[in-house]
Image 1: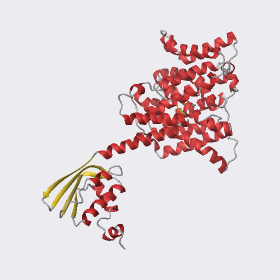
Image 2 (image 1 turned 180 degrees about the vertical axis):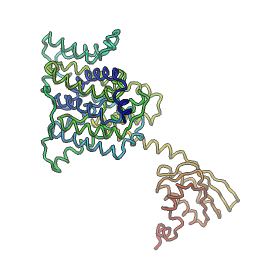
Image 3 (image 1 turned 120 degrees about the horizontal axis):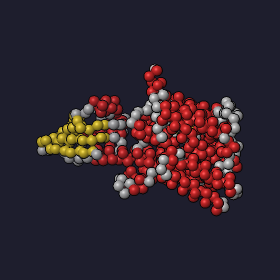
Image 4 (image 1 turned 30 degrees about the vertical axis):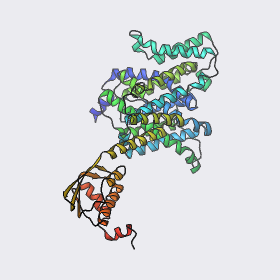
Length: 496
């Protein structure tokens, strides 16, 4: 127990402390920007980022991973906030937490193995496109000063890391915020700032229960959003955990992570924060800055709150153009540019899955629907490919009397018609032997097709012998097949 606590919390004190501070600095602009995307006050995202990081540090299944308010979750909240207000968002956040905890106990994280790499790539690309699209209102019908500030911000973000020593010490998004805020304060140009978007917190968060009626009508409003938030939150968290596993060459408990995300969302909902999940970008920043244990996540959350509460007057003066530059950087960094190059190398079926995921997600603004469509198409492609790997050969054992068929492959709903079409029912023979030793029957459709084959042969007066069924296939055939049940066969053929 003590050894485990030491390893999870105090095995990398210096690296975790420095990494936590860096992440806290980088979290501020993103938390504010994601709040604005969702249509809520900046303090909602800041409280969420603080509370989620602190809670997940204790409850999560992946040490060193950062959870906070995210763009993927914020995009799902826009309609709910616009139509029903903040209180219903807080209620949906609480329900999201409960659903994620339930998912953890049901071990739904294990289902991530059914999400193919092409779906994940489509998911990431769609997220990047949606984040960029969310910035367009801030770049529409504005003065040239906004474009100049945004361009300058992007220049700082991408050029500052090239400076020796200092360029690798400070996060360039933070430098962008500081420099553009300084320019705004000195020049006094008339552009929108964070303070124009809503009041920043100047106190610690307090416990509060959402002011909504506890009835079925409220549940009907928040449940669809909570389901979408649950699915997207867990998908992004599981993908982030996998990325951090690869970076650190360690394993994580994905189902514990589901429960931890649920507890974190319960906590943030009760503290006035919006629903969140693991952050791919910030988690990678944490790992590359030296963070490895739970302490780095805890320090990131605590430092974030300290900065916001005691420096809120300065944060309110940040120009929106600086945040737009940061978010454009996030969208550019999130997009998988190699996937465009890979379109020429990858199979068409893989490309279709990726592009369909992107197209559906962007058109619906719903990451959960996009992933569902991608997984569905990938599953159909897989079933089609496996269904084509079926061979039925035949050999005449005794001329005019006995023919043997040999079946090799998987027989299920996608290959059953190919299986049935491989037999010659018009040939006049006394006996047919069907060797199934290298075949596997998976479902009811396969069993019913086998019934059709056997019954057709027997209807022509041919004796049929099935040999070689493996144990699993024999179990399903014995339970559901009817070709050896005269009454069932007669009923099937229309008898009375």
